[in-house]
Length: 66
Image (cartoon, rainbow, N blue to C red; front, side):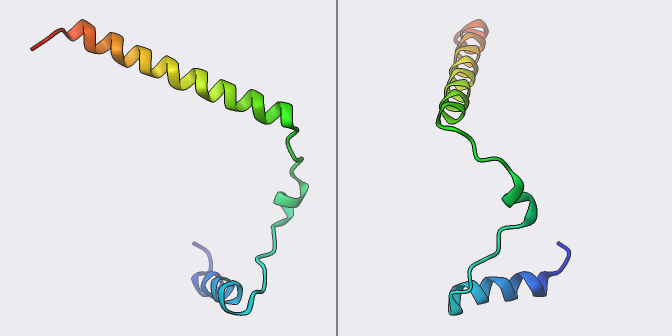
């Protein structure tokens, strides 16, 4: 945390006086993802989650009932 006072000022400026938080330079430069990219990323995350679940189930089975 570089400047806590500055952060608090920014927070109150936003909350009380409706001064919007400026998006940083990098945020502006970042390319907006297309619909296809977002869908692909969502599908990849879902696949990854399912894989983890299956692995967990397999691990539970291998330990057997205690």
